[in-house]
Length: 225
Image 1 (cartoon, one colour):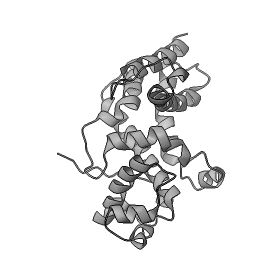
Image 2 (spheres, one colour; image 1 turned 60 degrees about the horizontal axis):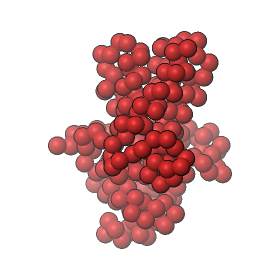
Image 3 (cartoon, helix red, strand yellow; image 1 turned 90 degrees about the vertical axis):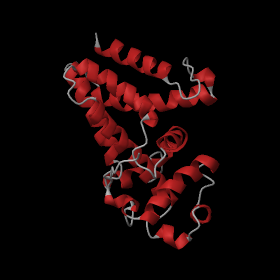
Image 4 (tube, one colour; image 1 turned 120 degrees about the vertical axis):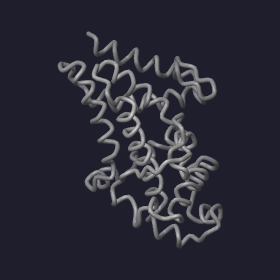
């Protein structure tokens, strides 16, 4: 059964937080399904309105444009992963074990039991892998960064970097490693599924264990020195 979790996101991402209304939750639900179905380039508010049996005007009441929808979904996922990390590492004192769990969580967040009924985490994870970088690899990145629209990603990176520093206080690149872990997890799942000559890991269905092993190998090879 789904439980009531409200993800806290920057108010600059939306006109009205879609989590607060039934219509808004439908926008989240069907945006995920439609982007997964047709891709972000083909996605627009007219198609979204048709899929959810509503109007374009109703979508514009919540979001300025489709870029903000994607950034909202990606930010939701970043915050969701951070929430799972907190839940999965609670009462774990050993920083190495916490870092191992963090890596497992980065990779397996999509497999968690559904906790928000209007978000299909496994489908959203596919969007993060295939479309997620388009939320911040944009011309307006500096302006949006000044408005703190990437705050959820920064918080996630900071959370992981803090554990890295706790495990190895002399490691000079904790934030670099933290963001790379997230990016590598997504990139190498994508490579394994679509461009296998760009990676050495194999992904079979939703079995990402080899990705976990690869990330842990790189992480602890660097940090155990």
